[in-house]
Amino acid sequence: MKIGIIGGGASGIFAAINFPLEYDVTILERNDRIGKKLLATGNGRCNLTNLNLDKKNYKGSENFVDFAINNFSNKDLIKFFENIGMKTLSLEKGRVYPITLSSASVLNIFLDELKKKNVKVINNFFVNKIEKINNKFKVYSKESSFEFDKIIFACGGTSMPVSGSDGSAFSLLKNLGHKITKLSPGLTQLKLKSDFLKHLSGTKVIGECKLIKDGKVVDKKYGDLLFTDYGISGPPIFDLSYYVSLSNEKFFIELPLINEVDKNFSDFYFSCIYMNPDFSIERFLTGLVNKKFIHYLLKTLDIDKNNPLCNLTHRDYENLLNLILHSTFEVTGVNSFKNSQVTLGGVDTSEIDNKTFESKLVKGLYIIGEALDVAGDCGGYNLQWAFSSAYISSKAIEKLYDLK
Image 1 (cartoon, rainbow, N blue to C red):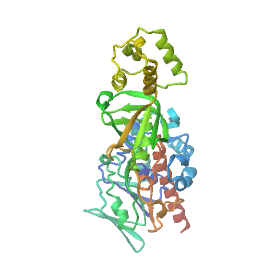
Image 2: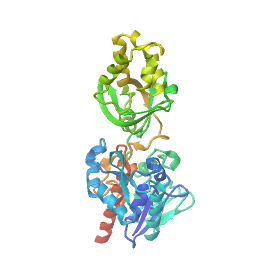
Image 3: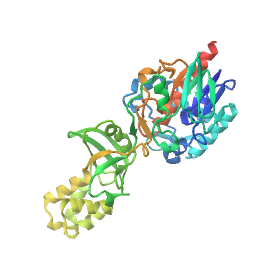
Image 4: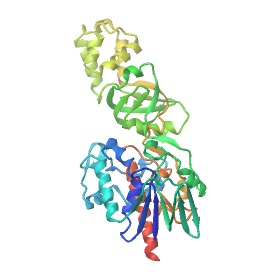
């Protein structure tokens, strides 16, 4: 049986190496090498999965992903890597990485596994047409074509187009009758409205960020936050961008300007004021927040930086404390696909069997990974999805083959 895998990213490679040696497997890749996007994952450290894996980490797709992530779970994935000679380690918030903290080492091991399985890799093959004729699939580029018994479609979505996943492959699936849901950037930065962004750019803070709509908290995430010249970035922002990307409504974010604030901070704040009445407001804030935040705080409240604490009113103290703990910015949008980590949207999952990943419309066509309308939270959940869906699709084809 000839298996054609369109796309040499994480899911395509993983699908290929999970076929037995006797299978005739070919990866067709548009780039000059496979695994290009994999190298960039986890800031080059390759966040493979997460110890806290749950279907709730896939908003709107919980029921669809449940079978795959349970039948090839995070534990199964870690064991898989151990079996091919790669040890993993878990770091912050359950994130699991190769012990080398290098995406390149993961790709190199994958390349070795492909070689051991005699998987053929055809680079610089840009698929422009797929036909199904007499239960066979014909896959064309401008220069040549291949014929396969089964196809696994693993072309990714539209995020990080520089890696080759620019969304153009969705037209192939449309031509085969599949519906593509609305495509939006996922796990990306937020754009904010503020006159202080250029000044705040590069400033970091660790804390809880809340996304607010109509005065109510939509969701909240904790972690590293980074101001940029257009808005704000960081893992909590990536997760919150999901809601903004899928809606045209007005959102705000609320965050503290002091690192890892605790419930005793207010007591310390007022105690420090009363113990040091001669401190200028700038000197007082220097011990609490980043210097760039001082400019933002005092300009917003129209307080002179040289003003001594004893000259301020209790209301001034309260307003300043509130701004330190609950600074609010209007969200104006999300960054583009160029900066996003995943794609929101893709092949409508109602058209896919979630226990095999075979198309319900075109028998013998399997669609996996980011090409599907499935997106996970930041923290290794999307690579786990790529690996789980790839593994399940390969084993489904293997069982069909073994029955014949």
